[in-house]
Each structure stands twice: as C-alpha cells, then as structure tokens.
Length: 337
Image (cartoon, rainbow, N blue to C red; front, side, top):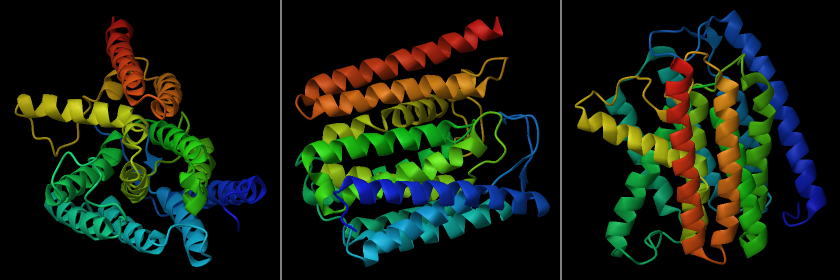
C-alpha cells in the first residue's frame, strides 16, 4: 500500500470503518449474553445497565490494521512494538473491566508500558523542544504519556465523548500530516485508520449509547493517540500536538487539581468533570458531546494555524477551551435552575 495516495487511504478507511462497526455490534451482543454490563451507580451518567467492553472490537480492528501497515512497511518501523504494547494494555484493562484490579497495580503497568514505548520514540529526549535536559525530557515524557492514557479513561464518561474526541484528533493529525509532509513515512495511514475505527463505533456509542468502550477500549486508545501526538511533537510540531487534545487535557487536569485542593480521593469515581456537570438535570449527553465536537473542530483549525504561527494557534486554542468550559459550567447552572 502506498500510504500517501488517496485511493488506498480511502479503501483503508472504508475497510476499518466497516470492520469496527460490525465488530462492535457482534461484541455488544456477546457482552449482553455474558451479562458484562456497566450498572449505574450514584456517580454514573447513565440510568440503565449498558454493556461495557465493546472497545475490544475497536482496538482489535485498529491494531489489526496497524499491524498490517507495519508488516508491509507502510508505517513507521516502531508500529509493531506499539501494537504489542497496546495489546498488553488492552488485556490488563479487560481484566479490570471484569474483576476491578487495584489502581496501584494498573499504574505500575501503565508506567512500565509507557517506558518501553518511550525507548522506541525516534526523537525521545526532544519532546519538550530542548527546554529540558535530555534525561529530564524523557522523564517528563514518560509521566505525560502515562497521564494521557489515564485521562482518556477518566474522560470517557458520557455517550459519544471519546468517540468524537478521537475522531477529531485523528482528522487534525491527518491535516497536519498532509500539510507538513509528516505523513510520508506512513504516519498518515495510521491516523486515518484511527479515525475510521472510532467512526465505526459511533453508531453504537451515540446517545442513548447501546454500548461503552470500557477500560479495554479507552486505555489502549489513550496510549496510541499519545504516541501519535508525541511523534508529532518530536518532529518539532509541538503546538498542534498540544492543541488537538487540549480539551481532554484541560478538563482532566483542572478537575484533578481542583479535587486535590479539596483533599478528595482522586482515584475514586466522581462526577465533577466539566462535561459531567454540563449534563445538568436533563442529562442530555448528545448536546454536551456536540459542544465538545464543535470546540474540537475549532482546535483542528487552531492546530493548522499553529503551523504558520504557533503563538496565534495557542491563543485561539486557549480561547476555545475557556469558552467551552465556561459554557459547560453555565449549562450546569442554567439547566439545574
């Protein structure tokens, strides 16, 4: 496959989309038969039991596509290792979905897998653009990657949110790859497959969701999306790498900081993310996910702008995030009134 030509990329996207859509439906039926359900509790954003773990289909389809790209030489050489690490994360996360593993054990494994993945980054030690010494850069990258794969899990709390976030990031990465030439090494094919896999999941995950990703979906997705962003930053395109996931980074990090200041147990489930409070009393997941999608579309534009002017791109991105967080906070109060 020639990853840079439109026809093969469109064929790849179509095949991945169809496989993800069909696979998600099949796994959903299997989860229902096995009664592997996410039962609502006080902190849940849903009212009825919903099958969780359909991320098995999404991740399997995505990694199968990436493995094919890797074995045919149509993607970066470290793709095969990243697929193996993502599979290991998915296996651990599936166990957590069905047995609830200790948080400390999961964190140790996440750090270990991110450490191994770090060794395969071609530009490791340069992610922070020379602002840190090489060793400090590597440590910071390790912690950032581990935080990112976990925040992807934390943020997957309402119908459609991680699907639209990942599709938007994938489309943004594709645009940056085309405009900069980064996609010439097979990078473009990877991000196209990512966006297509998540689009295939969208019909089942949109409000009212028929199935959830589960940890088995959100954690490996956070890992591979983090890798794609780090590859971009290592090539010097730090601004789009920061801007594209900025909503997830901002909501998760600000919420974590606020809970730490309040002395809360941050490892316990909660409903204090901006997107969770933004549901209000009407519990309209679709409205919140659409607002996030609109902001993400703006962030794609900011990422493209940052290729010519990083400062202007960052200013636009911060303004979009501030506006979205303020809107979600206003909606929480307005709908509750």
